[in-house]
Image (cartoon, rainbow, N blue to C red):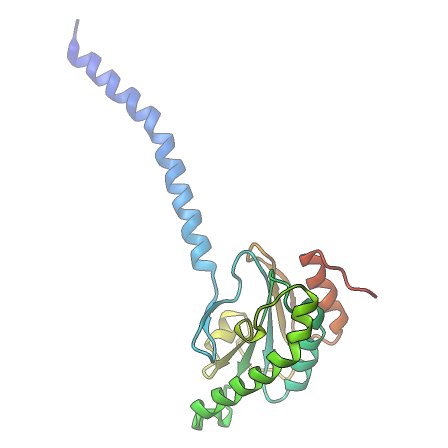
Length: 201
């Protein structure tokens, strides 16, 4: 028997069997890398890194600047009854491009932190109504975007005088986007459906 030929055939057979597994492994690693690359991370005014589209929660990202701050506040309050639901988080991105906040960034961020302290007290009853005994302050998040870098990553390349809102589902996928939200009830309905908590309209 030609042992050289026999060994060659065995080696070829092994290669044929292993090759599909290598392709599967490569595909799995590629998918994992894609998922990680898709995460949108930002550091908020409290110095905490947040994943704005993290898996396991519905995330609402609300745009704000001096021109739309009242609308931002109204949109946030439309979601009050969902505050404290553990699968829900909201983040406000404050677009500070071209503002005077550049002159005193520390002061601007401290002011935002004080506003969050007051907001946490206001939201405590909603947390309790949803069976959450935690401190709302730990969940509240505002990102001061001085250069517009985060806004650009969210698709907001220019400042605007309209209320922009992004909603990510629990898999981290974009579920809804508004460039000029005016119907806050629609936002509440969309988020409630993703959480399995329909609004009472």
